[in-house]
Length: 119
Length: 115
Image 1 (tube, chains in turn blue, orange):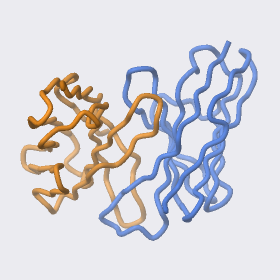
Image 2: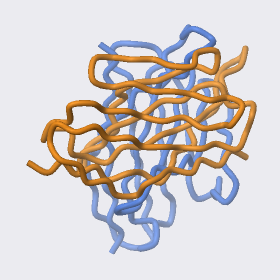
Image 3: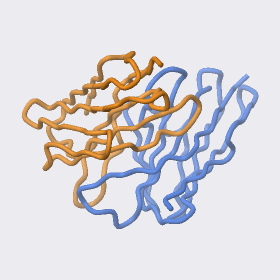
Image 4: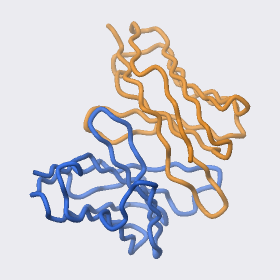
């Protein structure tokens, strides 16, 4: 149980194009999903918190107009990298927090990640 | 915001020995502290977590200790095995009535188990 999928697993695009990444919780509902970015040999950095049916909350320094997040259902969140540039090349990982999780836990289940390369 | 420091960045131990990784956090409101293991190119896997109302938690060869006063927590792996080799991340977040914040991660520790 608690499986999270991401699609695509990798994508190569030209500079200036937009790329959409999907994050799905397969066997549970997730009111809240999170998007992280991980550069090679570095840690995961939280980009934004996505809540079903409401606007995403972005971390300081993350451009909301560049990284569009939509969380239209309890099992799907999407991240669109608009007008991608080579510096956006990274490993993007989503995580999902099961709805109804006990208030003292914040267990998050991670997707397998999407490797984005912008040429 | 929260800041998590993790040490060491690289840790090499002999197979069968113990490994200890330490983290400190800055935000006293943080109340949930997970540890993740990540292999190259793979997703992070939760190996153990602890809440702020607990001082220690153990799961077979893995244990985590938390000192709320000092704002630090540690991961202990005993009887290390070659398959324990990976990058380990600590993290901190706040859980509250309406939900939870995202995780703030430490920079990671590359654990190398020498045969």
